[in-house]
Image (tube, rainbow, N blue to C red; front, side):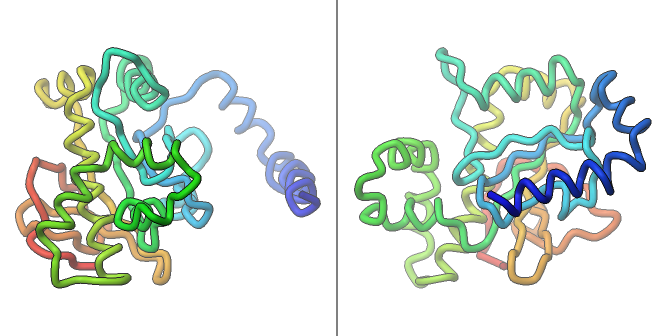
Length: 221
């Protein structure tokens, strides 16, 4: 905790104070560039890997970067998606998975979730991912299997996104684009899903490929 408290004082003295006027303008409202849905994993920092400023990303984080399908009983993810599109006018949604994801390990090896019934229930929203991996990637094991699961899970959650009314409306009107990303922790690389090749490929400065419902041809990361 002491490190965190010291970090707050460093922020206030060395980050906030020199840019006080800019931060004061942030208090007037937000206009984020994208809704960024990613994992709660402490090794993932959306603003750091995108080199974005406060106010530029509207972020949803949970175990496994999961988007539950639209349901009658609204949850936090559903409400956040609706607010992002309806109130903030966001036109891009990114679902970003990552390598070495503990949620994917739990999904593939449910015995590791002993004593964590809430986690087991939550990962039920990724059941399609588990079945795809079980049926399609029988030749893989270990880290390669976990990486394939993380990639497939990004696509599954993008499909879940499409069940949300605000998302479906935006896609129908052409005012919304969906993007599937994978962050490779050990190299700092970010890969974007290309529906034409069925692969996650390294993002370039000109990359901006919207997602269509499709599947991986093979794990690439």
